[in-house]
Image (cartoon, rainbow, N blue to C red; front, side, top):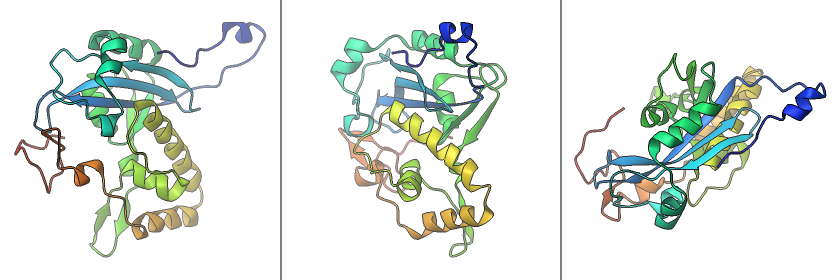
Length: 233
């Protein structure tokens, strides 16, 4: 459940701990209803800017689970029932590792923050959304193109396309992509080449695009929505 721990013994010997300012939070959810808004937190991961896993906790939803969305989340009924803790306990664990000065990074990180009921200025300092960092101006359509995390990781870091997601793996991926963006942006030409590469290579179809509905649950693709529920956020 808990990952890297700062070592008091090393500190007593004069070792200095690196200053940690940026963290990635990632959440995996299960479906508690058939519409695309009916989701409940089932896994929380926290990773720092040095890719150290500080927390990986499974959460047992209060509401009955309609689908664990296993091909997408990697979560199963056995895993959640055996290792899941109540939501508030999971949040307590998270806040014990997360300083109020933290800058949170991630793909659509605002949604994760809302799911976890975290408040800016109280639980963290600021958000950095990878979707905004890696967006590129598309001259063909005269608009901004926004890319999914898997596409950016595959194109720029040769990441294989994952068959399912995992909160820890996605949080580490977010940290690596953020660190890469900081490196690339130091060289305007390299940054422009990266953006052009993202535009030139077609993205792989997402799970939601391939599966408008899974186990009777709408997956929330705007073009193929099966439930008619509003799109929030």
